[in-house]
Amino acid sequence: MVNQNDVAKWLQEVEHPAKGDKNLIELGMVENIEIEEGKVTVTIGFAKHRDPLAEYLIGSAKAAIIRNAPQGTQIEIKSIIKNEAAPKKKGLDLGEEELANVKHIIGIASGKGGVGKSTVSVNLAVALARLGYKVGLADADVYGPSVPKMTATEGLMPDAMQEGEKEIIMPLEKYGVKWMSIGYFARPEQALIWRGPMACNALKQMILQVRWGELDFLLIDMPPGTGDIHISLVHDIPLKGAVIVSTPQDVALADVEKGVNMFRNESVNKPIFGLVENMAWFTPEEHPDEKYYIFGREGGVKMAEKYNIPLLGQIPIVQSIRECGDAGEPAALSSRPDGLAFLALAEKLAANLN
Image (tube, rainbow, N blue to C red; front, side, top):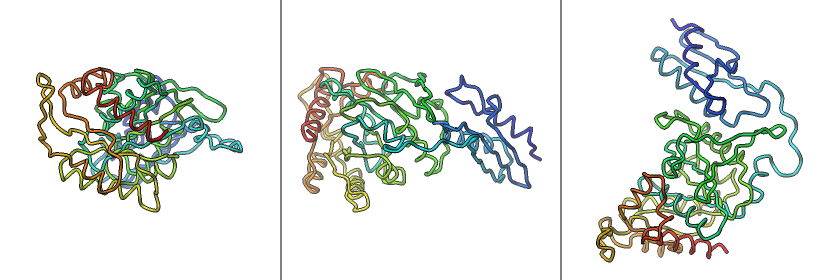
């Protein structure tokens, strides 16, 4: 039989990344544990300003109990605000206030995974910064955040500060870009067991409570697909439009059509600023003038023409792109052909918007 002491012990596995890795029990955040036949109910208390990692902690608490409780145990995690929040100020919403000085908020999307969307997002951000723009990137792929790895910022923790009734998160800065990712608040090996609404709420907090400051571009690296996270982002974040990333083969292009149709649906109705054909061809580093179209030829070009979307660029497969990503040094920092391809992409996107 499960008892309250068992559950309290399991909840000691849930550490708060912004509180010196102290766990929920140490922090006194577990308000109540109820045990009924076949069901465990835990109530977690948050301060009046609402912890920016609330959804992460709720999901982690549930996961800790799932790992330890007998199979079939029903689990419910409730949350309460210990003190009533003060009325919001009139004017801008507290979240929108942090985006007030951001000129262009652009979603980087793809219809399917594995097309290099995050690679394009990170390198596009760095390339725009190299062109002199003020840039930020929010890693919205909550189930597979890759920005920390690709920028060599793993293990770093963004600072947080209290301003009145709200807590503000300060983005990390490197390569002239401001970075934010859920990956900074979870261990690399930790699986985030979140349902759609929980992931959406966590994601909105990770964007709306960040002190972005004055930016020309805020890129949002969106998760693959066309699910509820995308709809939530479009409705709750003032996206100006999207850039679609694909590879040339037919199976990827079929999913691109779904992504295009999602943004053009009357309930979303956001412009698509262009399509990026990633992995357009393979070029051996020792033979830079050779091109091998291993995934098909100009599939992205044809798709852009079909849907009347600007083709922003074709990015080749070059071994250095993968090596730079793994090393945390984006290829766009270099003057090699891959770096110049990302710079050309950034120039074209900026020109289309300006």
